[in-house]
Length: 78
Image (cartoon, rainbow, N blue to C red):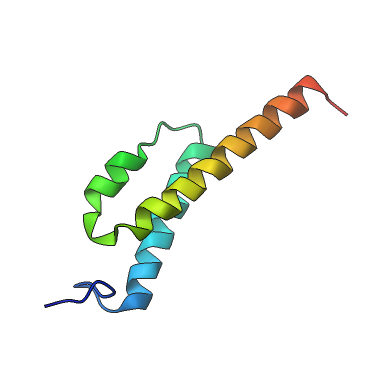
């Protein structure tokens, strides 16, 4: 049986790589203006919890910060 740090695809490195790919996809879609559901991404990859959830929460903070910065720049152009 697999330990919490491994998955069927391989070891810890594979797990971290999968999480990274999913988070990067989330960020890319958000930057492109797509509606993205972190809940759906988690539901599609439950084996990557809780780390995936933590990383997606961080990514959401980044997305919100970028959006706020864009609004601020539009309100106060250089």
